[in-house]
Image 1 (cartoon, rainbow, N blue to C red):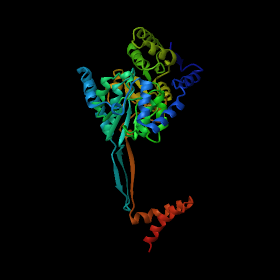
Image 2 (image 1 turned 135 degrees about the vertical axis):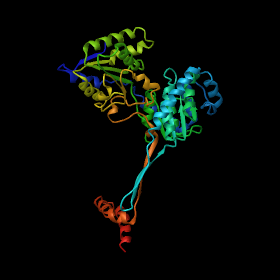
Image 3 (image 1 turned 30 degrees about the vertical axis):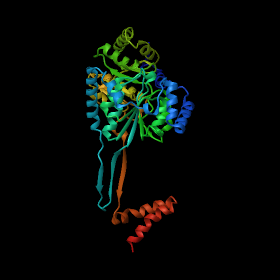
Length: 433
């Protein structure tokens, strides 16, 4: 049974705080091991990557076989059924179309004094994408990470994807081809992150690393941040559904399970003002868990972290949701647009009962790489903006410097930075000669 809370209970806020504070991340203390791996890759390059790949993935490589060859990629892609290829191509088209609208505009304007100010955006030169391998091998993640990078104008995109025991997912390789990936390496773990960040003789370093991974990958991304940029450190997936009684309980149950089946540490939350409807959803979840293929994982998630909250009305539901700042938020209510206006913290919002979160995972268009663990309070999902930098522009005329220069010189003096002030004062003095 899930945790069941009622906002009318005297201890509601205490219990809600406990739910909000649940530690769901399965984060073993791997930092020391990861630090050693990164140091090894920095020192020995390809040799370290090859040795660690043999140790952890049971795959023996050479510098020449770290990357998939064009011939290997073509052979694997040829195995993909036509229906799956068509689905990936449609998803890519929709993701590309959505992200193309995110390209930011440069700006430059002139003040009355003649001074010019503005900014311009330029893409990072190279980006690395981590793609999990083995059981958690998701071609959709390739599209969601690689397409925004290419739309942004990234010239070189390198993918690292472990292939334990040599097992390859052809769909991942096809997704890489569709998204315009330039290089695909069959390596993973902290060693792959280190190789992307610092480079080896075979793998050129990148400027930014994105993509999900296990605790070792997350720790490695934390360690290399600063040397390169990273997208985020994502935790277990989560979904929050606000629903009224005018819904099919089984639909809502399936939406909740769509995230529970990801991971035993995932969290599924239902907020509703209708107690009878809540009971129907709980019963529907239990019925679906009898037959769901990943019922062991989903069942553990629902048992340990699943939560049902009874609220007074939808306004209160929005207030509670904002405290969760969920990764995925479904608004299955009569007027989802009106309720959406009251949401201030959410990674992605799915409006109406006909918009299941799973559409967003694959083919809706918006990115599915989203902030977790309440970080939607201060961060956003992956976008084109993650692969560009903003450079500011400033140009002073003599008249502009005459107007604002004295204030700059004064502030420099206040901060006891003499050369700062003199660099402005020297020009002002030249104007007064």
